[in-house]
Image (cartoon, rainbow over all chains, first blue to last red; front, top):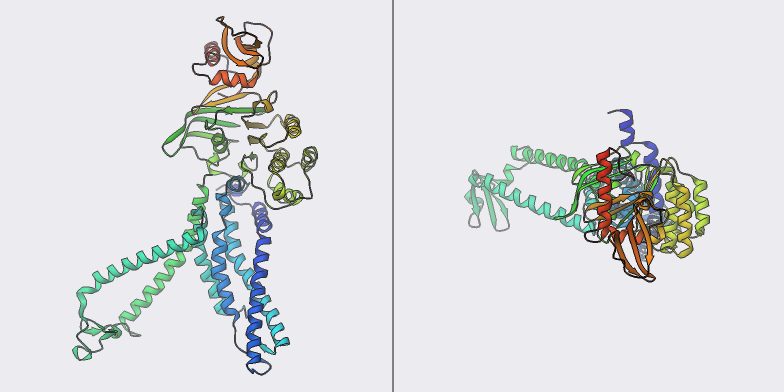
Length: 289
Length: 294
C-alpha cells in the first residue's frame, strides 16, 4: 500500500478531529447522565450508612465494597446502551447525510466510535466510580461515621471486567450500525436468539453423540443399579456403566475435555469481537441514506 | 470532475436510472431540474457516495464515490434538504468542522453569516429552518470545496434571503468549482444556473447552456394562441401565451426557465427534438454539444 493510499485510509489529524467532534456532540448528555448516576449512588450510599448508623453500628465501621455493583452495572448495562447509540445519527435523515459525507474514511469513523465506546467509556466509568466512591465515603464517614469501603480500580477483577466489556460491547457496536431503530433491544434479542439456537444445536449434538453411550437414564434406578450414578432430582444418568459425576470429576478425561471446551468457547467469543468490528466497518461502508 | 457513464440505479425492483450519462466540468453552476420523483436528490446522493450505483461507472474528482474516500469528501460539500445541525454555537461549529476542509475560508464564512444575518449567539439547533439552511449554505460556500451539491437550497428561505443567496452563489463559483443545484424553484435560480440539466423518467433529457438555448429558441408573449409551423411550444399564461419558436438567426431572447422546463418535459416535445436535431447535426460535423453535460 502506498503512503498516499494509507493516508487516505487513516490520518491522525482526521482521527483527532473526529474524536473532538464526538466529544463535542456527546459530552453534555454524558455529563448529565454521569451527574445523575453519581448523585444516585451517593444518596443510596448515604441512606445505607444512615440505616447502619441508626442500627447501632459503631463509628468507623466499614461494610465492604458496595461500589463494585455500581461499577459493573454502569460498565456493562450503561456501556452497552451507550454503544447501541453510537451510530444512531447514521439513520437519522439529515444526520446520516452529514455524518457519511464528513471528511473521514469509514475505517476512521468506525475506529473512533469503537475507541470511545470501549476503552474511552470504560476509563470514564472508572474515573466516575472512583470519584463518586471517594466523595460518598468522605460524606458518609464524616456525617454518619459509617463507610462502605473505597473502590479500588487497580484489582485484577476490574481489569477482567473491562476486557469482558470490550468483548461484549463489540456486539452492541455492530448492532448499532446494523439496526436502524431500537438497536439495544434488537441486539439483546438477537443475542438471545443466537444463544437459544446454539443451545438447541448443542443439545442435539450431545443427544446424537452421547445417546449410544448412555447406559442408563431414567427414574427407576438408583445407586444400587450402578456405581456413582448421577442424579438430577428423580432423574439418574450413567454412561458406559459409569455415573456422569465420575466422568467429569477433576482430573478425569471428561473434566479435561470440558475445560478444553470452555477455553475454546471463550476463545471463539473473544474472536467474535474483532469479527464484529470488521462487520461494523463493512456495514458502515455500505450504508446508504 | 464528475463523470457518470451508463449508470443504473433503482430502489428495490423499481428502476430509477438506466444507462445514465453525465459529465460536469469546472467553472459552472449547473441547474438540475426535474419533476417530483424524477431522481434529482438520488442523483446528488449517488455523486457524493450516499447511494451506490448498481451498474455503470461514476467517478467524482477521480475517485469512486461509493467508497467514500476521505480525500474526496474533503472536496465535496452536500447541502441536503433534510437538515441536521448539532446543539452548538456557530463559532463552535466552525472550529469543530472547518478543519475537516483544507481550503476552508473563515473570512468568507464570517462575511456570508453577516450577509445572511445569522445570529451568532444562538445555538444552531435553536435557529429556524431557514436560518439553519442559511448557516449551512454559508458554511458550504466557505468550505471552498471543488464540488458543491445543493438540494433545493432556496426552499425555506424568505424573500430577502433568496436574493442574498443568489448574490453569494454568483460570487462563490470559482473556475475550479462545480456547483450543482437541484431545484423546483426555477424563478429563484433564474440567471444563476447555467447550464440546465433536466431529468425525466430516469434519463437526462436535456442538458444545454443557456447561451445555446437563447441561440436556438426565441421566446415571447403573444395575446392569442399561435398556430404557425415555427412554434415549438405554447402555453397559456396570465398575459396571454408564452411561446417558444425556433430561432432562425434572429436576435436572442431570454428564455423563461419555467416555460423551458414545461416545453422540454411535454410529451412529444418539439423543443427537445429541435435540440436533438442540432446535436445530431453538430455530431455529424464533428463539433461537441454545448454545456459540458450529456
